[in-house]
Amino acid sequence: MPKAVSLSSPIAEKIAWVRDAHDQYGKRLLSEPVIYGALSELKAAVRASREEMNRTGVGEICRICEVEEGGSCCGAGLENRYDGWLLLINRLLGITLPTVPWRPDACFFLGRTGCLLWARHVICINYLCKKITHTIPSARLKTLRQQEGVEIEILFALKERIKTCLKKWTTD
Ligand code: SF4
Image (cartoon, rainbow, N blue to C red):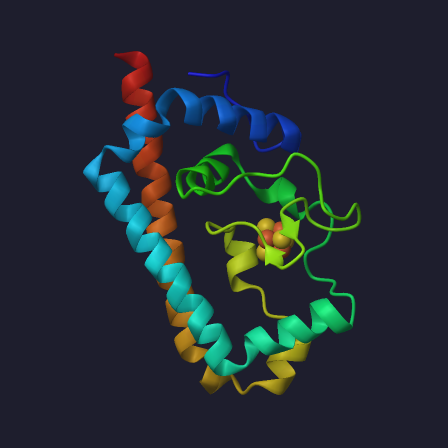
C-alpha cells in the first residue's frame, strides 16, 4: 500500500497516492461485488441528482453563472477538502484526475464544462448559492435535497468498504 496521505497533504500528493493505490488495488477493488455494486449505485444516484438539478432549474442557473457571468462557487482551495479516499472512488469510477488546474483561480477539479468529479464532497453536493435559493422555492428543491441525501449515504458506505478492504489486504 502506498504511504498514506492526510487531509492536509497537498493535492498533488493525494493524487499521486490515488494513482499508486489504483495501480496496486484498483482491479481487486472492482472485483469485489459489494464495491462494484456500490459504485454502480453511486453513478445512478449522481445521474438522478443531475436530472433533478435540471428539472428544478438549478442546472440552468449554474450554467448561466459559469458561462456568462464568470462563475464563482468552485473557488481555488476547495480541492483541499477532498481526502484520498474520495478521490480514489472517482478513479474507480473511471475519472482521470487532472495534474494541473484548468484555471489558477478555481478549484483544481473544475474543468471547462464543470466539475470533473462524480464522487463529490458533501460541501459540493449540498451547496446552493443565494441566487438559487432566492429564485427557486424551497418546496421545489425538496426532491433534489432527498436525492443528494441518497448520494451522500452511498458515498459514505462505499468509502468505509474500500477502507476496510485495503486495511485487510495490506495487513494479511
Ligand atoms: S463541485 Fe467540483 S469543481 Fe466545484 S468545488 Fe466541488 S470539486 Fe471543485
